[in-house]
Amino acid sequence: MEVHPPKAGKKGGIKNPSFKVLANNTNSQINIHIPYGGVFPSLAKREHLRNLPILLEKTLREANSPSPSRRGLERGCVDLITVTYGPGLEPSLWTGIVFAKELAEKWKVPLIPVNHMEGHIFSVFINKNRKKFPISNVKFPILSLLISGGHTELVLSKKWMQYEIIGETVDDAVGEAFDKVARMLGLPYPGGPEISKLAEEERKKIKNLPFSLSRPMLHSKDLNFSFSGLKTAVLYLIRDLGGLENINEKTKMQIALEFENAAIECLVHKTQKALEKYKIKTLIVAGGVSANQHLQNEMKNIISKKIKILFPKKDLTGDNSIMIGIAGYFNYIKNKKKVPKLTSIKATGNLRL
Ligand code: KG4
Ligand code: ZN
Image (cartoon, rainbow, N blue to C red; front, side):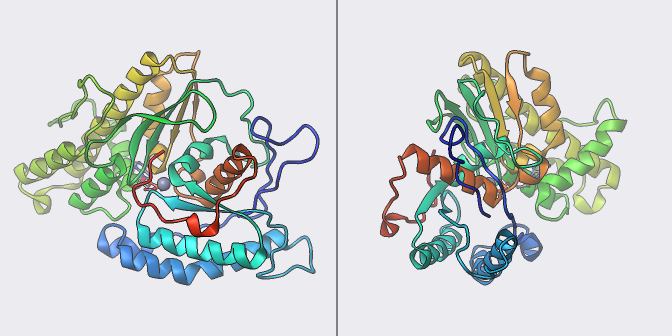
């Protein structure tokens, strides 16, 4: 992925950035991990190693295509490289970092390390035609609900690129719970979209469900979440209903619906509490789980007219390189174009905002 630097004149900087996406490619490994019911770390690393050069060449060809003299692996119009260094699985992060460092050295361009979660925050500002970046009229304070396969956190920002985690999961991430419950129901990985599909179908038909699940930590005084107990409650429910082999499609859909209702209710309730407590003006909901339609509907329901709510476009809810490019650009500007030494960039699995 390439992002144009700010244009000369009024455009540019943190307040009025100008971007043009020249090419954007993602290589999903989902099909490879399906048999394991989740990401298999050593396989992920091997696939990254294999795919990165192919993906780079394809992307550069597309980005450089207006200029016929530039082809393949030439630097072309790249002025800056950004790479995520955490949080995540360190072997996979290292693969990206080593690859990016080699390129930065070869092309003699700066390399900016980016926090993956900061990338998700910036993903909401990329609009459909990917030309405008409406950031200048965003009002503070901002609350970001970041929900993915590895994270569930509420982040408060009183100014750009300043973050305070005010609530988070004490055990499993919400995306992880979706994936695990999907597995219990015999649905393929990643489970979020599968559960959500079943739940949506059933939601149209039914008013009262024959069973209910707990809403862990719903009434705790803090802004934290817990999803491990909810997942275990589904396990016991399936057992009490006679095991998966004795559950028909209708019951499966009802379980998916009640699980989705419970998980989303926890997210919405704590978000609402945080909105009131911190007098929030802008709510950002991002990360893979933000694709969930029920969540989007419920969040819109609790928002007063004074609060602006922002979600990523559907194709940018999951991990993507545009968000890392844009977050990297903002870091570059914020640090007055000072760049870290290549040797100081290290994979940091448990990196926090
Ligand atoms: O942000 P992401 O693409 O990767 C991580 O950084 O983890 O998030 C992936 C997670 C997976 O757990 C997946 O099941 C979940 O997002 N997800 C969903 C939906 N689409 C993806 N969860 C609920 N409903 C969805 N529609
Ligand atoms: Zn992510």
